[in-house]
Image 1: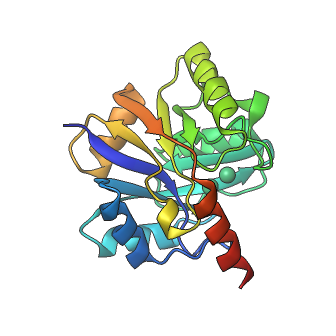
Image 2: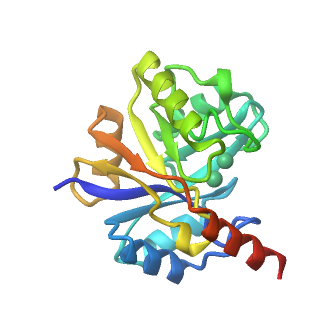
Length: 210
Ligand SMILES: [Zn+2]
Ligand SMILES: [Zn+2]
């Protein structure tokens, strides 16, 4: 049985998310996930800490704000600096032994990579449940990943607990971080997911305002 892993979740260490570590695990289990990747904006310390402290499969990642758009890195133990070019950022991730994912490359209002995605990336996030317009993005991202010949992954981009699990990647691997990341590199993965429903987005917006 492949593992079900949501590859894009923000903990409350991200300035725009309120999800506590406890909630991440609660909602991940409730959605039937086998694991979750924590990808805070430009920091990895909380993700590493949560991964260490919990028996649940947590993959520590970071969503880096490069000059060309957002890039997710996995398999690294220290932050990659923000504000650098796309090529340099991907090179730095690889130098540290990590893998680089082009997240939500076609989404509007998200600082997306757009034309900056190249075959240097180890994967493209084809399904991102927070992307707008959702169906258009999935179609475009799929075509992009296929043209470049890179593996396809999926994540919810959750910033509110109930959003976790709306997208996940089926990974043919043992439930350990190194094996999961190796499987992604080899393309032993399949993106699955849908858009976060409007009611949940609304609840999140109300929560943010109050
Ligand atoms: Zn992003
Ligand atoms: Zn994100």
